[in-house]
Length: 191
Ligand code: SF4
Image (tube, rainbow, N blue to C red):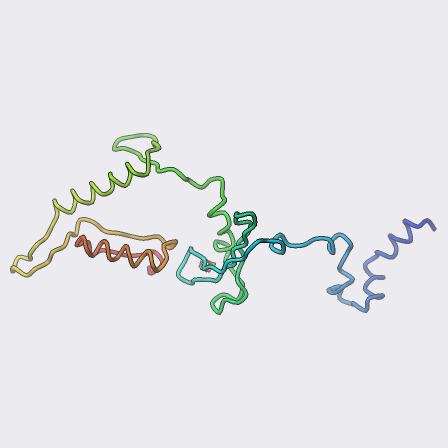
C-alpha cells in the first residue's frame, strides 16, 4: 500500500481514538498538525489592559489586547468576579466599538426642516448645544414657587445618558446639570 494511503489510514479518527486511549475523541486524537500550528492572535501582543465593558450596568470584566499601539482584540476577563471571562453578544462585539467601519466619527447635524445630515465641526456643535441650553434655561427658569419657596430650577431640559457612560462621566454630568438647575437627570444603565 502506498505511503499516502497508510498515512490516511493512520489519520482515521477511530484508529487515532483507539491508539490514544481517547474513546470520546475529546483529547489528543482530536488534534491535527494543522490545529497544533494555530495560535490565538491574543498570544503575541505587546500588552494586555484590564478594562470593563462599557455597554451596561453589569460591568463585565474585559481584557484589551494591544499590538503596535493598536487594539487587536477585546475578550472577557477570566479574573472578573462579575463575569468569570464571559461576555454577552453585545459585550463580545466591543472590539467593533473602536474599529467598526460603520462608526460615525464626525458630528452630524440636521437643521430644522432639513432633509439630510450635514457634517459640522465639533467646536461649532458644542457652541450650538451651549447656546441652546442657555437660551432654554433662561426662558424657563423657575426662581420661586407660587408660595414664594425657592426652587432655582428649570423643568424645560432633561438629560438621559447612555450606558456607555462610566461612573466618572456620570458624576461630572450630574454635577454640571445640577449646577445649571436641571433636575431631570437619568441614565440608561439605571433604568
Ligand atoms: S453589555 Fe453584556 S458583556 Fe457588557 S457589561 Fe452588559 S452583560 Fe456584560
